[in-house]
Image (tube, rainbow, N blue to C red; front, top):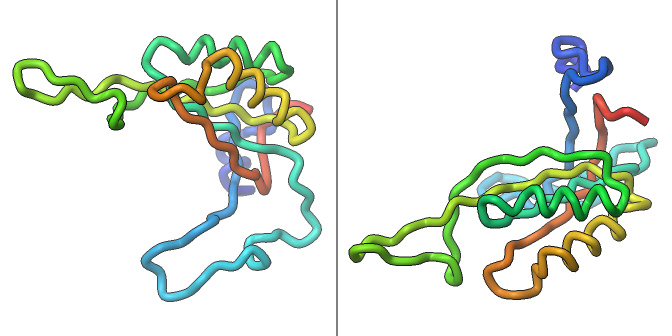
Length: 145
């Protein structure tokens, strides 16, 4: 991570952000990773990574809700996916809808407010409205305090 920071200058404004997160489960390896192994000694979890997957065109609504709850910004990634509620057929061919993935890094103290605001605005508890999950972040580069 430090080499990446040196190469891309994440410490300078508008040069990007890098972060690391723990692997919760590792499948296909010859060893197991326990929660104790994932803990980085002397480091405190200060950030969370919020991932929201919604239909194309709805990512800006996610960002509006997140910013209203205190998030400073996020990244929108174009994606394609299918689920049991979204797949449609056209001329006997399955059409997979376009998706957007919104990645938002937040301080842990406001993560609950941000996720609540997104959930309320996007109605994620309704089938086909999207999904959201949160990961702990171990270390960050490029975030302005």
